[in-house]
Image 1 (cartoon, rainbow, N blue to C red):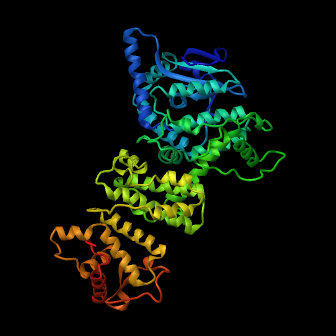
Image 2 (tube, rainbow, N blue to C red):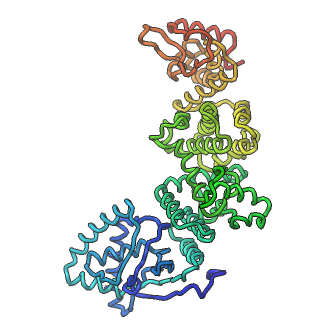
Image 3 (cartoon, helix red, strand yellow):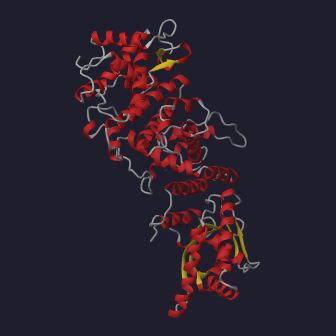
Length: 557
């Protein structure tokens, strides 16, 4: 039983499908498009047909097809709050059977998804019903209209919150509904209370619907996890659910001029939001500065919040995104759609999204943050053979085997005053060597970025210095010791190190200049003095032998 519900505003009755459809019904703009697949429609037809045969034999009167919640709008018709997929399908069936009379009117939303599903389902329905013959079609139509019934819940005008309360309750009892739908319903309800103009409300909801899949991914995979991790809590593997959506519900607006009726901690957020919203007589003074770790403002602000972070994440992940941010994510692109690296790439994008949200930054700063995020996420993947989500939580929160061996990166970002403080802190965070990794593709890229970090810290000013950094990083992985144990090499030679560097792409072959090799341009960058050096392989081997004899890059030093 629902609590705190005005019983005078709610009328519950059982009615036939004919009685339900008589009059004018409307699909309101905050509803999703019509998305039933052909399989859903076929199942409904089969259920109705089976019920006709069964109920006639057993003497039952009607077949119940669920609950429909409607709200009386300002225009005198009824908005379908819950049950629109079935109602649209009822109309489709009756249209094919030529049984829709003038009293049955349905105002549906006009969008591409709805059109496509209606067109496909219309084709399937005609094929299926044409196979019945005219007499069976007539009996099926009569049974649908008068033999099938629904529980109709009518909510009076001015009580939309009660309609949404029933919607939330109806969909919290085992029905498949994404938590973002519940969030959308909650914040639409707040816009009604705040008096948001209808045109603005409609535009915000339409924008949400156009990007529904991205928004589900944004909240379920990123914003939810970030919120948990910076609080030191463990997010669920399955992501956002109905029980955890409260973290995206926050401050109710009191109305302009009533800011001082709010709690002290709420007041600055409310004043900043009002200052950012253009009113008929007042221009907006400045855009609202969203932050992931600040309180949510309910209503219209929430839809702007969702679009703001959808756009930020899109810059990082979209295939056709030409931005400098996307270019900074080049290290994770080869692993983006590979199941083995799913948690690694999601952690990378979570870190970069939170960093950019807090500090912004120019292209170089974002590139540095992306390199830091990649090293952090790749080290997690390289350090274990199997990576369940519980292990991701332990790694990020420095728990279990990672206690005293890792940094809680989301706490570091949250507590830092500048982005450079985060990058400096993470660059000097000690990590154990990565040993015995068979993941060469990721390992090579990890060594490359780790070497760039050391080179960028001023540890190299020549090609020889850069080579030394690379060799030291190879030594730190335990690769040389592993080769010796396996008996492949009695001692580590310059030739072996050259092969590793060449296969990894750290040393490249310049075909235009004969049998010459040089350090990859991306590694050398602006740090080496003079012109980039090209040498024959034997010269590189001799140089590496000298480094090894000095003790630089040896596994036993």
